[in-house]
Length: 261
Image (spheres, rainbow, N blue to C red):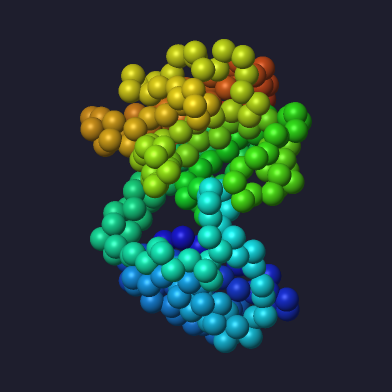
């Protein structure tokens, strides 16, 4: 499923994992102690209370920011009694999609020698993403993302990026599910750059290239279609942005084959 990875918890280590096949949230300490929270239809407030109770039962006295990030008109977790659904079958499908996306994203990541993020999941906007960095500083980001401190946004975009990911869609009316790719700062001519596959398009409102998930599913080779989207949109950002492509790029990795140097 999805994991926080090991997190320092004072003098111990805490890891929280969503186990989607068994529909359980695992909370584990490095010394072997654990608690479980069953994933089932309850309100956000109830789920939050269960999770925090499990954390405290493990002896970890921690407080968190209770406001969801990157969501307009958000409600604090302990106050949200409106959202109470959990569709196990939909969660299973979502998990399988993330696994498939992760495989292509991870392969795409092997073609870059510069700084690149791991393939990671954003809890706020709920997208799986991978980001490449040119190494050069970027102009200060204007911020303004709902319920996300501008200082966090500006640190995240302190250097030039080309970022791509998968977004499953939501209730905000922005469509989805789709794959996206954007650059910050967006170089001149980026919106009009030729990208692949043919189904890809530039969305002026979002400032991103988009590729509908259904277009990838319908393609004869979905992995190849998605990889073409990732590579062509990155190439547009890097070429128009004047990145040092010769120093930053390499051939995509092959399993069991060391990179020739």
